[in-house]
View 1 (tube, rainbow, N blue to C red):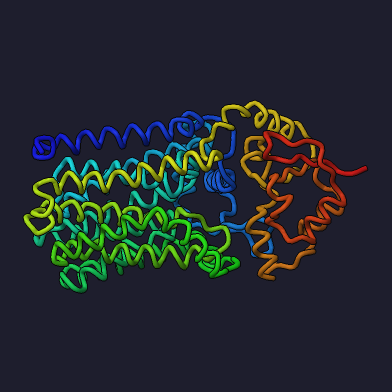
View 2: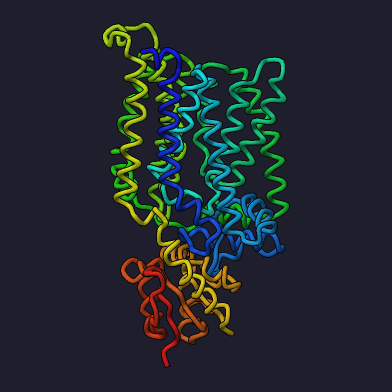
Length: 485
């Protein structure tokens, strides 16, 4: 108990959790400068950052073979950093890591708002990092704006929650501005703003009224700026981008994640009930409900990944803070555990994430990024081969063509979604079918997984292999094809 009473138990657990997290992400961090693509989106983000920096068309026509379904701001931020480091993929990875650190700090600050002591707040920050690794290990040090958007939105939420009456208008304007910026980086970060409004509706309607007024002012200004810069093309592509939706996909995904989240769901509800459903505790429960519901319906869309549940990880981390606080009060659980309640609570909130993250590390070796270190020279050689070609080149893994300094000819995923949704005709004059039939590409590079689960319709894949033949499998991931003679 001496450890617990003086906060040393929390400090020991903080050290253990952070050491485990660093051990799990060491290889992805070391792979940041390597020209090895971690996922499909890295090259896609890098290309649009390049377009933003060079004044190109950020939102192409509807019948183009490329599409942009993200808001614009991340491309300018990544592109600006990319100019300094010389590589947009590396820039995006660095921003992602820094943003994740900022979000973890904001989680600790939100824990302090809930009433947590300093040690418990730092422990919450560490647990958040471990929780993120457990659910979305493939997003560690990856060029994707998800964490960047959360950094702005969580910062805005903190200002909203901590604003005092004397500076309410200024605070709400700043809060609204940060949240809108987050939305202009990535538009799926809606759970926390919705929670703020719902919670304030029940507990602080004056704060809600001022915030809504401030959001209206900031929102109108943002809409005018967006329309003047990108017109209706951005609205069309971001909000109405063709995408296949299947409810079963969301059900299967949630079945997978619940095995990791269930202990924390239970702890959050137990903490909320034991604390007497206080206003701050209710904020956490509302946030959890909002993030789980939003995550569920978003996951029904093709191509949507578990990064949609980052809000749920934040909410559950705050939920375990409630749990520890509840068992630290002088209630019946404390008396029943004879003074060891807080020790038990701290161990209960740490051990499941530690075990789950180790399970993910062992069971999903592809997320370690060891191949990035082993096969880096093969990826470099593939990009060099493409860069030396004189004709057009099409890459499914867009980062390969980006590093080869070739233009983005086709976005396999979004083009495939257009065709599946029948919003663009498969054999349009500039379409992929015509290109491969005429053997316009000097090389085509597809992912090995596309041999069994292609992003493009089968009619296009058949046409591709009728006119192109595979000559090499690179790093056991990329298939290089050349025209048949």
